[in-house]
Image 1 (tube, each protein chain N blue to C red):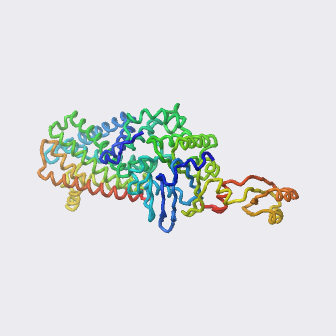
Image 2 (image 1 turned 45 degrees about the vertical axis):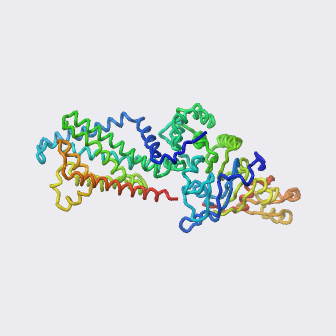
Image 3 (image 1 turned 180 degrees about the horizontal axis):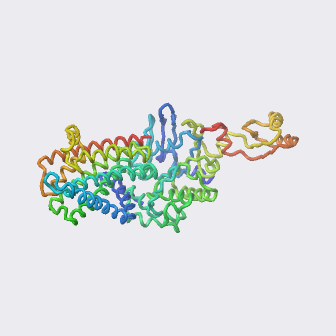
Length: 315
Length: 260
């Protein structure tokens, strides 16, 4: 964790984003189901959940792009969607799919986007070097979008979301489709933003990303809150401390052997997962079995996620 | 950084969208202008002088003048339609440019107004280019031609608005072929661009009265001869009414398309 929660403004400080009992239905499908949350200033708040859990819809509701069926949303202290336009003056958004303008260069993308916030060119131009440096794209200022790699495009999307110097930035799966190098650079930039006091709301499928970046995490499934806490507290509360992963031959025998020795056993396809607070006795017992591949590790957020939302596919 | 409150500047919010499209156009301005001038020049020379030499006069005026006054309206219609269909659809659906703008204080209505004014502006470029060709070739050099310009702008706005209706319902580029072949091409023949309306059966003549292209041609044609149509205000009313109706429908359908 980056920052201790105690550094945040007190609960009484005006929240940048508040949801109270928000419902949203599309046809027969209840996409968001009584969701409440409150974002503290300076916080990085993560929303994790399987495909179709309602993450993107939640962001659309927060921005006033969709109207809730019931419930109340306040963005920058203003009611949404009624005053969404005004609230969005101080908000930045990085969408799930790049929507950079392919007709323009890197620099022009930033300039043109700033105008949508009512910024004049004379106000925007001095900010460009700073934004380009943040995106590590100084040498690409005159490049066309088609010349940029996936990582560069994401960084430009991020820089573009900062053109109005927002207090709160929404990031919908900011590192999906990036290679590890590109992903690490984005993480570093996001940490820099929280260090500058910006608030972030991000959705992600990568549990290590959520664990690394987020001060608090909301686990969302079927539009409902399943759990919400700091990554460490979630792991401590929801799952056992250690995990033994097994695959190969002799899974049935291992399952028999471990049942009295661990807290929880899960069979998934050709893998067996044992959850326990003390791995040593189980590991010792497993030495009797040959042909079994064994991996012993500490529990992480992914274990929490799989326990809370299940292992079945959500296509 | 202190931000100007763009929400206070209601009437100007569409302008950055117009400006964006203009900036893209500027990069390809020369080939675009060449097309704007070459196409009508070829049409006027081939049809006007070629077919005109066979026909001679129509309604007591040389065919080239009859044709030129209709063709300028048709070109504005086509230019506005291409921009409001193919180009706007690319920005809306393919490039997701509208989605990117929608998360800023500039909203969907502003985007649509920006697209409307841009498509009309671009159609004006075609109109002005053809008017220049007409003056240079000496087809008409009446001072009343100056009044053609605001009429072309109105015509461009009408067809941009209608195009945005089609855009709001489109699922792909193929959809636009129907609009061009089933709506615009027949409208051209019903609006007296190539031949007088009197050549058509009476019911079709009645139908023509509500068509925006017919209204535009009826308004523009007399100005080529330094004359004014006594029923001009009626045609003007048709254009304004068509514009208001089409704009309202385009807004409603676009809002519906984007309603998440």
